[in-house]
Amino acid sequence: MLLNIDPKSVTPLYEQVIQQIKELCARGVLSPNEKLPSVRELSAQMLINPNTVSKAYRELERQGVIVSIHGRGTFISEDFISEQTPAQREKIKNELKQLVIDSYYAGVQKETLFSWLEDFYEEIGGEDDES
Amino acid sequence: MLLNIDPKSVTPLYEQVIQQIKELCARGVLSPNEKLPSVRELSAQMLINPNTVSKAYRELERQGVIVSIHGRGTFISEDFISEQTPAQREKIKNELKQLVIDSYYAGVQKETLFSWLEDFYEEIGGEDDES
DNA sequence: CAAGTGTACTATGACATATAATACACATAA
DNA sequence: TTATGTGTATTATATGTCATAGTACACTTG
Image (cartoon, rainbow over all chains, first blue to last red; front, side, top):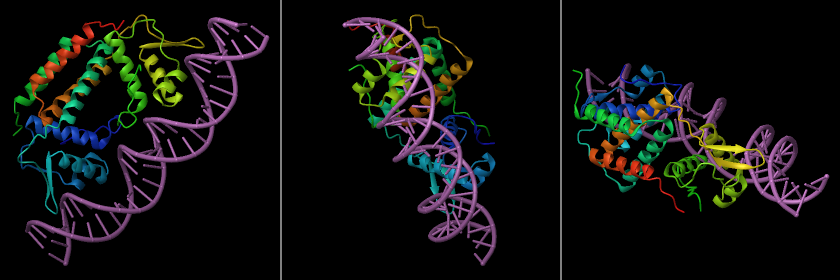
């Protein structure tokens, strides 16, 4: 199973699809030019509506992560160009601030946060390939 | 003005109230036992509905950040006990993972993220007081 | 042609958000 | 006591998002 969709999560289904595909790309599990399941195929596997998958693919294409070609299919983008918009940068910064505050109230220590951050970057930098 | 509410933000109004009050507490701007504006007063200042403020206060009390006393008012909690629920911990960890992935796609470097993290913890640890 | 693909559109239901308008219970001061 | 300010609860309405369902169209490939 390519993705792991949880219908009971508070995170919207299309958002889960977006997040997980982006993660698989970042980890190198999905490589550039690789073909993704079709809208109908993925929706059948994940037991969700085709429109929901379509919405996720549309947003992923808008972000430059994938490319959809009419009649052919959907593929991982070959060349990924980070936009580096100041607004995006500020958004991430604010999310990080809120995460620090929530960590403070949840009793998560500073060192724990740094440790997790190191781990995540190791996973990405590792360029894993499940071939 | 105690808070800075943006009606045009995608973040719900009551969520903005929650986040900002938690931040003010973490930064030490708001101290334990300090009295908060009444529901009606804050809603008048922020130009939002009293029900929206009430919803935010209710959630903040559920999280143990504030305490509401019928007929008297709402106050910052004296003793804050972090719950340290495994679910909360996992939630924060997942949010951090997604933040790393989004940083990857936004072109935000690892070092930048670490730097921001240091800054935020400095603000909290600083125990600033605007007296 | 047929089959598989992405895409677009309408409709519906469930839910969250926000406002509005009341009403009630409690605490405090006059 | 009364008056005022406080938190709390309820109902109603409007709006938007999420998800599903159903249908249709255009494109690519065999």
